[in-house]
Structure formats: C-alpha cells, structure tokens
Image (cartoon, rainbow, N blue to C red; front, side):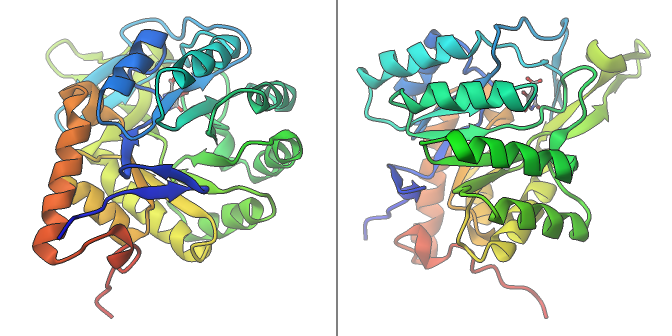
Length: 312
Ligand code: RRO
C-alpha cells in the first residue's frame, strides 16, 4: 500500500501536507532557497511590511525547555523584496510559494495584496496581527478591525488567501471570529500564531530571557500544541470544512501531524521545531506520518481527517 500524504490548499496541490510556518528562517532569498532544498512541501515566506524592518533589539528569541519564546518584531526585507523573490524562486521550483502579508493598517495591506496579484505566488497567508509589534494590539482579538481588514483585502486580492489567527481560548470568541471570516472569500485559516505575551525568566540571573517588551513574547513549540489543536478543531467544526484549516503549533513528530489532521487540519506547518532541529525536520515528520498511517491502515489523509472521536 502506498501512503499518500499529499493535500490541496485552496485548490493548490502540495506533494505533502507538511511545510514551514511563516517566521523562522524564511526572511532572505538564501533562507527561501534552503527551504526549496528541504522537504518542506511549500515555500512560505516571512511576513512582510511596506518598508524593510530590522525588528526588535536582540536577544529576541530563546529556546525553552518545551518550545520557544520570541519577540522578533517583524524583521523583513519589505514587500518589494518578496515580490522579487517569488519571481526568482518560480524559475527554480515547482513548489507552491506562499506570501505572508502583515501590514500595519488597511491601506498598507491593500497595497501589498494588490502587488502580489501580479506575481507567481500561489497563495497568500494574511497575518493581521503579530503579537510582537511594539505598541500594536493583536488584531485577531479585535473583531471590528478584523472585519474591516478582511473586507478591504477581499476586494483587491486576486490570489487565493487565508488568515493566520492568534489562539482563541473562549468558545464564544471562536463563533464571533468564524462569523466574520465566513462573510469573505477566505480559503483557509492557519491556527495558531504563537501564544502572545508569555514571560520566560532565567532564575539564576533573575532576568528575562528576551529583551523587547519587558521580556514578553509569543510562546511556540510543545507548549502551544494543545491550544493549537483546540483551535483547529473548533474552526473545522464551525466552518463545516468549507474553509480549510492549517495546523501550526508544536509539530515535532509525525504523531503531532497526525493529531492535527485527525482534528480537521488539511496541512500542518512547522515553526519552532524547524529552528531547533533544522530543515531535516520536514522529511522526518513526513516519514513518521506515513509510517503511522501505514500502521493504522490509512492510505490517504481523507481516511482520517477530521474524524476525531470524543468520549461522549
Ligand atoms: O516577527 C514576529 O515577531 C512575529 C510575528 Br510577525 C508573528 O506573527 N508571530 C510571532 O510569533 N512573531
């Protein structure tokens, strides 16, 4: 039996359902070429802004016992660089190329969505709220702002796009945000961005681990997995599989990927584990997922996707 872990996101074929999350090691053309040389099934680019940004002062990322904390502050080369990178990469690869857009206001997002219309980018992941931009709230927690942004970008985007969401914790919030997303031609949601504003402390030095925002940063890795799974599950149910869900948060193994797909994800992204284990993590997770599926007699993702059983 041949185990098929391919998937489609917004009609775009991915040879496997495992690729990189926006953020880690995807800022430069060199980074993106490294991703092309890895088994990541797509090339996801760093969230971009209108102007290039240095990001927050270092140290701004730290490994933790079971994950990571970051307050990178959106370091990126400015959207014009990513327009060019997509053209360059298109000549070098057949893998889907995904742009991540993170403007600071409606106008900036419109400008960037319009610009990517004329590139070979296959998909766009709209990141409406980094947890780490100093002085900016997490937009995903502001339903009115989300509505306004999605309305604006829906009008101009000719590319299929999805939305990267922060984690929600209150059941009522899932419904509110799902109701807004359903009003627009959003093809997928990615759950979850890092869990905003955690605090990691070094008890020896009695200092914070990272410098920006008094030490506060987004928490990723194993710590994030259970909330990521819950977010995938709730949006899978609320969207009735009409809007796809991509899982992100604590994917280190094929079993992690399996759990996300069981909860309803159509693909998974790897962030912290890519930083900690390097590019070979993509192939490792893919092989482990295939092996696990084979041991369970599953030939393809649709054999078990969304079919999580509960105890009632
Ligand atoms: O660059 C960052 O600080 C960052 C972003 Br844009 C994001 O969406 N999520 C995150 O954890 N860090």
